[in-house]
Image (cartoon, rainbow, N blue to C red; front, top):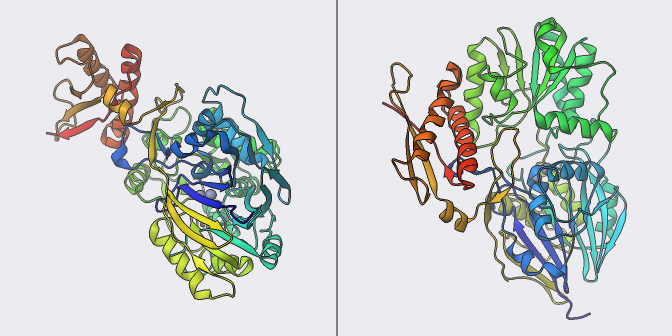
Amino acid sequence: MTDLKLQVIPLGGLGEFGMNMTAIRCGDDIIVVDSGMMFPEAELLGVDLVMPDLSFLKENREHVRALILTHGHEDHIGAVPFFLSEIAVPVYGTAFTLALVDRRLEEHELEEEPQFVTIKPRQIVEIGPFKIEFIHVTHSIVSAVALAITTPLGVIIHTGDFKVDPTPTDNELFDLHTLADYGKRGVLLLLSDSTNSDRPGYTESERAVQPRMEEIFNRAERRVVVSCFSSSIHRIQLVLDLAKEAGRGVAVIGRSMVTVTEIAHSLGLLDIPDGILLRPQDVMDRPPSKVAVLISGTQGEPMSALARVAVDNHKHITVESGDTVVLSSRIIPGNEKAIFRMIDHMARRGADVMYGSMNPPLHVSGHGSVEEMKLVLNLVRPRFFMPIHGEFRQLSKHARLADHLRFAGLEDTFVMESGEILEIDSRGARKAGKVQVGRVCIDSGSVDDVVQEVVIRDRRHLSEDGIVLPIIAINRSTGRMESLPEIVSRGFALADDGSEFIQTARQVVAKTLEGSNPEEKNDWGVMKEKIRADLKRYIVKETSRRPLIMPVILEV
Ligand SMILES: [Zn+2]
Ligand SMILES: [Zn+2]
């Protein structure tokens, strides 16, 4: 027992935002906590999502015992399908988390049926040398848990994502008592969420959004269109309740919004008042004062429901003068351009668009601020501390915070980046080398509703399939395309300049442009996405290749 080693290896999410994944190894046995993705940065146009490199886990495949999920946000479960296709182990999570994973798996063909183990807070499961207790935490998604992992060397607490919300809208309180119990008995290592370590004070309760939403519903004379993250069940409940009070029917629009509300409803986590739901196709026939819409697309994603509505290209709804549009979400850095462009489109049409920070707030964070982090540190009082979930500056701020608290027993704090190994044995804890980590880009076919086979686009793949640049020259004064688009390609074997294939591809791009309405044409983000989707469909059909497609639009 004396030479038993415990290793904690963050494989993603430390020193970068998103794609959280941590391996915990005791002797030979490994469990993995979360398997998240991140959305690609703008430079990675042509890629749908980014996930952690699984090399380390693949090399140790026979030792991996389980995947444990803390909650259902994409940065914690988004890579589960890819994880399971490589490493088929049981997956533990709350019913809601697993239902969200299951929905993602429908888009993927797995060789083996996944083994799901549904857990509840306060439940304890034993996996090899690990004994894991699930502890309910408050967060912007329902059914989130922290983990207390008992090992032969001591207890590891992994908070998952959390805020300490004293008045959660579903009245499910953060189980601080259980956390404190572990603290009293002694905790070897704390891994704690650092997302908001640069925000002083306390994060506002989810309930703080209510006054603003009430005000909006009281004041609005015409349609109220609310967009929030589809996983924000608390927020969706609030909108349903306010709509009911105001005598408005609610249409739920957008694929993710529809499926997630269905899942939450079927699990008893969302109360949908009787008779309140409207069919999307009936929205425009109703008196505008009797309608509310819940719609996905807060980040201005070009093909999302709200972005389509913004350019008046949605089957069922149009935003009209006097309508109120509410973006009840954070503006994720990097998405500003797309979001503001979308808002401009709707404002131009005379809608009152509410977004950004205001008081009372339209949106509150799901992550605890400094005082909440201190509370957790104080309750857990670990011997070792490793901040997780955040860019390096947030991790180091969180570490400083722990050092300043100077509670008895804190021996050492480790600011680590993905891939570094923290090793703990009877003598203490230390950094002990590195494993291979990195980002893997995933291209899941076209972004519209056609779901295609998933292809992992690593570097080798890119070098095989090459790159295709459709170049569209638009006349600055007329807004029209002057000539057929050019197509430049590199490393894409079938693309000789004069070939029929390229000629047809040029026609495909031209057709996409012609088929778009003037507002879409003015929005280059939308146009690039549409061109990419249509051209990709053509190329895949003709060649079964998946080159990287990066449309370029030039004003001449
Ligand atoms: Zn989260
Ligand atoms: Zn997260």
